[in-house]
Length: 155
Image: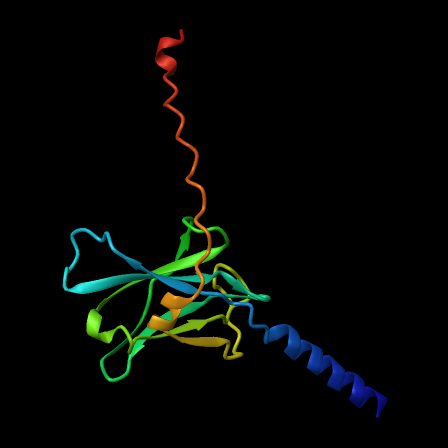
């Protein structure tokens, strides 16, 4: 009986470590007003998602309008906001704004996304909802670049 309880407790602890149930995620979206050279009939948005949620990392972001499209968005590191965010871009017709669904998945234990866990750590949002979430503070601009070091005149 004692060994059964120990095995049960070990299994319970392993499942707790593998599947984080913590909801500390605070993604947000912004409308991009200065996209030059793209299709003017579309509205462009950036979705910013925290890189990490508890002990798991962001693995994918999917945009969908039921019956029209579903695709994975590109994920890049963002340096324009304070905090550790990934940024994804999306262009849509204005009439679809309230219909776009965003699925954010946190299903990897490594930032490089080389491992996968099967816990179903998905968060679902409407794009219009993400636009109303509190935005992170802007990061300070990077320091100016140093002038090139011309060693040819130093001899």
